[in-house]
Length: 112
Image (cartoon, rainbow, N blue to C red; front, top):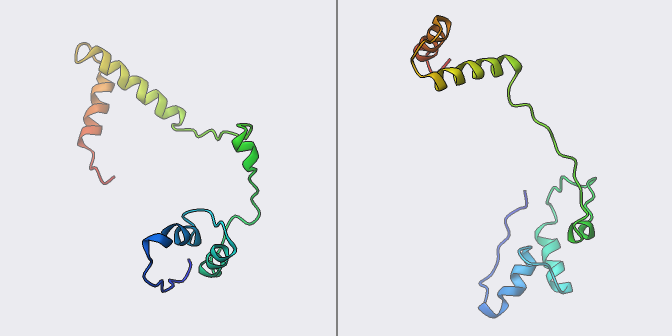
């Protein structure tokens, strides 16, 4: 993380210049760029080997491969399906193994 630097009192007329110097706006002069470089000279930039093409973003041609994340294992899907059946049927004609499963879940300690 960058070291904290002492910044003098900033006048309202110079606010855009200071925002550009601190990175909240793009630097638009050598003075702003020099200030920015001095403020962040010890910053550890972690994306040195990563390249991003801003033109492809602007032209809407930037494409990223989606990541597929598996939410549940198949045994969890089976359990969910059984509980869906309970939700549909209510409490009429429930199989005993479903009632036992519900009792077991209800009596479990939440910290388990």
